[in-house]
Length: 158
Image 1 (tube, rainbow, N blue to C red):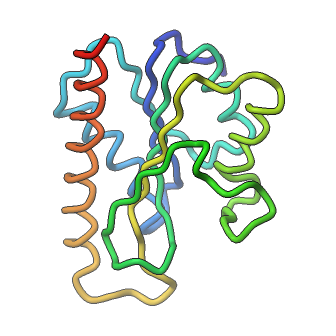
Image 2: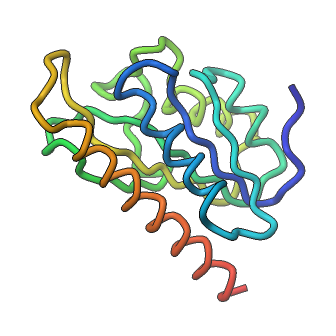
């Protein structure tokens, strides 16, 4: 699969299973309800190393994903790529080659966009929490609004 041509890209990362879908759901909400001209918004199923190719040629990339940090369910996290722990630390993907690994590889081969922002929604653990679905739906809406506002501010600044 070739990289999209848009200079600004948003990737909803995850899988079609359980709470890992929050990145996908946020990307789909952005596609359906927010006007973001010139921005490519896609859903990627556990992209691994493919993420490096999907980012190729972009100036700015937003990655939307599920996270588990111990924070409260539905909490939003925002990190710039430089703030992410290096691979081999506690930030590990359940999918083997995760976002941090892909960003480290992109940096090593000179394929890192000028700006990479990682947004995460805190998901629960293995046990299902009462009301988790409603909490996560609200978090998905909040995250879509945050990303859209960030893109619009960046667009006005250019």
